Length: 161
Image 1 (cartoon, rainbow, N blue to C red):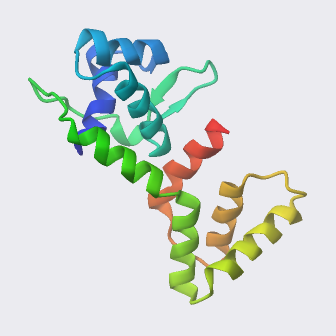
Image 2: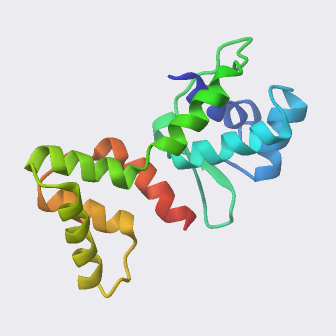
């Protein structure tokens, strides 16, 4: 597990709760463990959502992704400051829609602009009632492209919209 995954899973493991409000998250990071500032904790939550590590349930509480269900938090674990700078840059730089289009382009040899146009046609076929993320998934399926590594991030973007 990466440091960010361990950091995100920690409040769920230590509180033994399956869902946490944003306030409980922030309290855990800033007051209980004193791992980070208020701003850093808010940024970490945004980053974790973008990466698909957490998502909101029907009550608006955060739940941990299934991929992190068995994370063990090492005794004495404390995240370094590097996790926040690196994770912020990584989360902002990588858009899962663009990544999937890149994967499809690499597999098919088609130009990315052409694929974006095709994705827009898929959306218009559904009267623009589907999200861009859903359209890019359908595009990838059309070209039989493996995108499982992006599904959590795509799902998180759809749920946060």
